[in-house]
Length: 203
Ligand SMILES: [Zn+2]
Image (cartoon, rainbow, N blue to C red):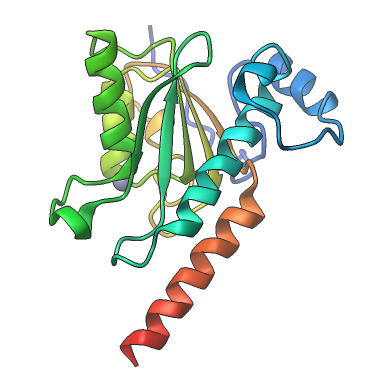
């Protein structure tokens, strides 16, 4: 199959619900009601996926709020299986573990693959608070991740539509759905505050 024609020039950067399945996206968007945020994942599984992704994003952001004092940029990720059960989890540990591969996404997909006993994650969704970097976006394509949902866009280093788009690249032998901008303002604000605090500490 010929790679999809790149349409970066025409595609507005990070439309909130960009993914191959536009029906699902519009359904989820239309059903996004003012429902309470504090529901358990099991309550949400049968509800619109958008609600589920918001729920996980909020949980991840609450976790990120508690980290960030150990030198690592507060970014966290989960992998959900085909039934939207959490099968992998990770947060940035590059500084803490002195591991250049210690990004939240890599830790989460490693856990998920070990749990499934399969390196192919076609039926899984990764939810992460920040748009993945080129290393993680490349790993997600290699892992055949079914879908990626991220919070804050990263125009400088993001590799799913920010500075480049590895999901929509001739080298991508796999179609990976991407949804950007879930709880984007909260996620971006949290990172801005973290960087501001860090600059304050180093002055
Ligand atoms: Zn990364």
